[in-house]
Image (cartoon, rainbow, N blue to C red; front, top):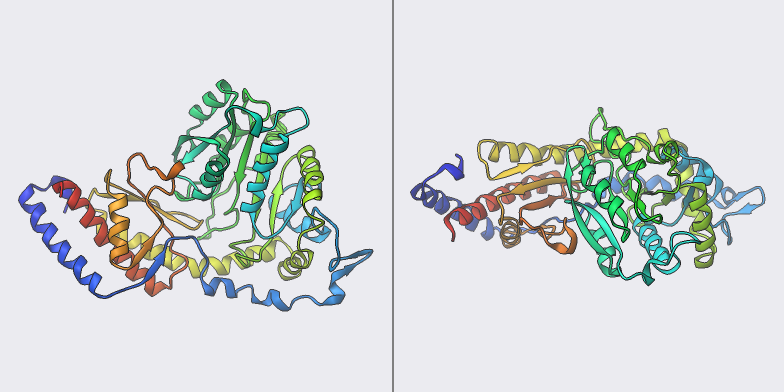
Amino acid sequence: MKYTELDRELLEKEFECVKKEFDALKEKGLRLDMSRGKPSAEQISLSDGMLSVINGEDCVSGSNDYRNYGIVDGIPEAKKLFADLMECENDEIIVCGNSSLNIMYDTLMRAMVFGIDGNSTPWGKLDKVKFLCPVPGYDRHFRICEKLGIEMINVDMTPTGPDMDTVEKLVSEDESIKGIWCVPKYSNPDGITFSDETVKRFASLRPAARDFRIFWDNAYCVHDLYDTPDTLTNLLKECKKAGNDDLPYIFASTSKISYPGSGVAVIVSSKNNIARIKDQISTQTIGHDKINQLRHVKFFRNVEGIMVQMKKQADIMRPKFEVVVNTLEREFSENTIAEWTKPNGGYFVSVNLLDGCAKRTVKLCAEAGVKLTDAGATFPYGIDPRDRNIRIAPTYPSLEEMKGAIEIFCVCVKLASLEKLLNK
């Protein structure tokens, strides 16, 4: 039935039925968590061979001893592996520690303290610094900006990426806009991959601020769920064609490829940017975990090895995503109270409800034993202007747990929507 077309008497009857169903679920005392995009234990175990893949002799390569200090930009073998994956040159990449979020934070901090290059004012000395934030988006990006006092401006996402008319207009007119956050493939949370045209328009931006940068978080670059993956145009190459070599900072990691807490992260940019970053981080560290970098090289060997790993990951994840999407289809395809994405990859399903229902739905789910990402988390400052978006993370629970969790979610969506329509 379509709730929005029912008269009040029928809405009241439906409310009583759904309320009884909800109360029965509460009585079960369930404890299910689909709040964060964490790999399951089954996914993590795919990398356990990495723990025994090297020995002491492997750590000595020519004059380099990877057990010792040095090599701040990553061991040569790791640079080659990840340069091949990211489709860049060896001098356009730095291989770091386990966290791309850490690199993004440090990159912003360096801009705040030192400026983007030797000719620009440190952002921390400016009266105002602004970032464009495609929404819905990644909460941890927004949290970095909030911590550093960077003002965030919402830009709507479209099926082909951020609204580029708005992006181009804003960056060309306002010198205080210094950057934009992007998750260009299987975006968090909508699962959108930026179109070729969108990437080329990014590469051709003419910002008013000469120290404007694109923060391109390619977190899900190989995280396909099906054998017909989305493809993403290479931003670095397009920037070179457009004469904007220094415009992008591109980030990625193996956090959802190997071990989430013990992976390898990289930053890719122009040779000029990479040389400057390398000089700056050489003060911060004598070198990242080279043995961990070597473990990844020995385990994966090449890009093909990474893709084999990701096929195994997809086989574990796909049924969980399909349970979510199929259940939403069954419960709401004839109702108009919910819309949802059907991602081809990535880690999330994004659901939009009736305006004003997201926070209530999350609260009801918590009462019934299902933990969700906070409503509003996919927007800067935690404020969803329409209070309607919820991010579902299907990967961490078992398949059976996911079946139970999404059933509860659907009941809570119905109850919150009925309360809204009845003004309860």
